[in-house]
Length: 482
Ligand code: AMP
Ligand code: ZN
Image 1 (cartoon, rainbow, N blue to C red):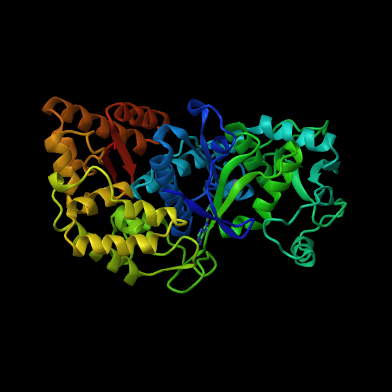
Image 2: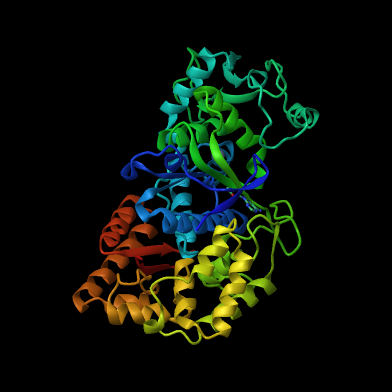
């Protein structure tokens, strides 16, 4: 089946053919490569942040289905150097590293609860300073960048195609740039590749012989991490539509100038923005809802992750989306009703072709919903169950796959393990249960005593037993790893 994706750069829905296939590389070497801008880890992720994570998880699953599980390389970065991180760490009185690691762990837990597979790589920006510097040096050597007052700036007029992605008129881009125009810029649109750090701010030795240690600009981080993992040109670059300009435009300018490539990514895929009950989500309005709140307590209800996932997919990824309580309630009801006549043994091996077909049409999830409704109506429960599993629904809310897993063993259908401790840990032999309980107690104690090293050590020990800890505000729960 031919996958079609809407490419923001060409403003066209086009047939997706991965570069390695088009180049006719030997079969064993072919890979599909996808990069998606990930979170800046300074606070809990909100439900808007969950949109690209879920959308690109569905695309990842589809690509794996079409090209083979081991053929798809999906990179989602972690921005762990940023002024917002510095500010938040100072506000909380914790070390930057502690804040970023903790926030990342929370993020990973949240998106796992939403049924998302881990990407192939999750590079942290601070571990890629070297390739960033290499790119910066190259851009300076080639005349695409210059040093001014200890900053390195990308010189926008050196890139004739600048603006090809967002297609904004020059005066509009200029107006945007003027707000923060610095006197040392040769052109108001020039943007930062590297800047000097003040004492106390994270800093690395600067490139280009600049004496003061500094830190990278946000755009070069993504260019460098994508380069290291996916090469000079790759198949898909994704993220929210808010990133189109300037972030993605600048990534393109850096990468294409550095490597002399006709494209950075062959498809630019952007999800629309999500708002809440008809309003833009903003801290200033006080209506930011985190994934964590939704899972634990939102308007008095903690929603199952798969209900939230389902609600997200009812809107086409390209459209703006309004997230509402009423919508989530309705999603929950539909999903429960779909699980109604499913029994573990009735779940088929593979989803029917219409499911893959709907996804191949630029991830047409509303069409997918129509197909699922039809399967339900026609009592094709095996296909319905297989489709839901294919789309990353755990079946937890119906205990459907749980029963199956316990009775028949994991593996055959690659379904999730049960997800609550009461249910699952009891399945461990008695002596193991005691050991798990003792470890949890010791960790609770360590946390109370703020002995985080010991708490982390115990977390790792439990992880070896496939037990995951979830730290909530007042409590810690255990889950069996999927
Ligand atoms: P940030 O941590 O703000 O850099 O955002 C991480 C990802 O979430 C990016 O891909 C953003 O485009 C996306 N994102 C942030 N807010 C929203 C929103 N309200 N709706 C949809 N996507 C969003
Ligand atoms: Zn990025």
